Length: 279
Image (cartoon, rainbow, N blue to C red):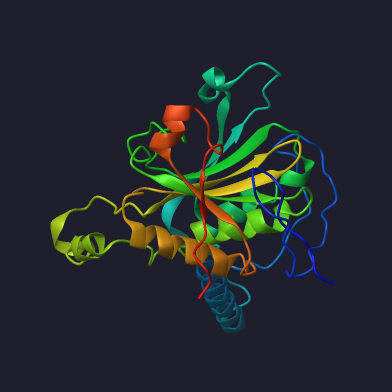
């Protein structure tokens, strides 16, 4: 049976022809309430690392059952930080947006990610209007004006209520698991070729982070990138989103620069609809 994922908002059409989504049971609304949502990671980086770790553990245990081994830690390439924007009261608008953003925790390994993730309430159990934000640790605050965000923008997908949990999880795994690593400009690839000889500073990814915004009539996921002016990179990111989320060809995606957001003081209004056909 086909499931319609996408909301009919601001010109977006209802879409179908997607895989059936299992609904998640509501949990307590607090953002750190434990939930039973263990599942195998869909991230290429996560799954490969965990499988190698499991094989190594099996080999070690067969060699000696009496020796205590220190648990293996599988580091990620980057450190990421989860944020939570607290529910705002009616009439309390954009002026207090940054004040409402609270840091939850950072993670830099597969193990620390799952330890945190299994204690986060899923989006379906959050009250409107609230946001989850996942951003690279090099970004001081997950806002438009941050020096690493200001020249970028974001891809936007609007979802009908009740289907966001799985898509949000898949997007988070893709970001933390470096599945957007190839989405970079030619100049950045050339700069990265001499990283071993040039600087000890970590190279920042093109992807700044991702968010989910729980609203009254829809849920909105977005993926932020650093350089909105590079059209080829933006298109690579768009195509990778379609792939990792397994989106149908008719999915409507929107893009908005952070400069435009600062001008109209809105994250999602007046965004540009991408009409590029899926090849």
